[in-house]
Image (cartoon, rainbow, N blue to C red; front, side, top):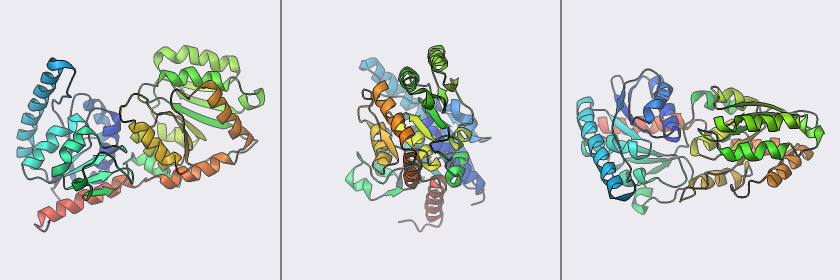
Length: 371
């Protein structure tokens, strides 16, 4: 241990940065040095990592048209050149990549400088960056106990660890699900991803407004909305006499989870990991425009264990949501059972398990016993 350095290569979106930050905190707690290699978009999340060195590299996707592809290749090349000098000078004992194009320069360079690498895949379908880097990775850490898109020869090096969540979310694993009965309020948390998808502001208030008054009086809504949707959503809730707290962003999501009976939102990998770790029943509405439908597969994993319900965006109508909420009010025992099922799929210790894997591979390399 002592002076060993682990370099974390991640960027782009919160879905990549959140598990990367969770691993960072686990390793620091064990006494390891950690540095972050990310892109300008990922740098917006650097506060999640605490006071560690952060290195910004260029990266690029294959954009549209010849010009887009050329610019993507140029930026990736510049990123690799920068990462080459950085990694050669820092000589980390391990580089861990979390997918997305911004993770490529650091992992790619480490693999060619004979530094061990581990990849972490958050989704049920391996991303393009991880698929590209997988053949030379020592291990591919999976969030879910199944994976599609990975080459057969790479499957032998996969390890199921789960999707790391922030320490404050992991701590919720022992939290008791709030009581819900035919006499208590129903606390619903609505989140629409990093920007608050408009579909939730259009459907949820109008659906809940159609509930009988006796049910509307027992509702407490906390909802993330786009700035442009706030006024209309607030007017709809006020007109229906429903208590609602609306905002474009919530700082302490862990505190919100503690009081939540039902979650409604997207099913990105980090969201699914957090909801299952906290043991909260969910109505997942997967983002519909991914070609591989990765969010639906993430949600299906919990739904198949009766820990959530999945509605396609086209099927997420006022009528469908109204029916689901009425059923919950009429059968209050549904939610505690679904909460227990959701919790059974969670892996709140994923960051620690991934940390164990990182340390084991580093120790094998440093002692020259790794085969």
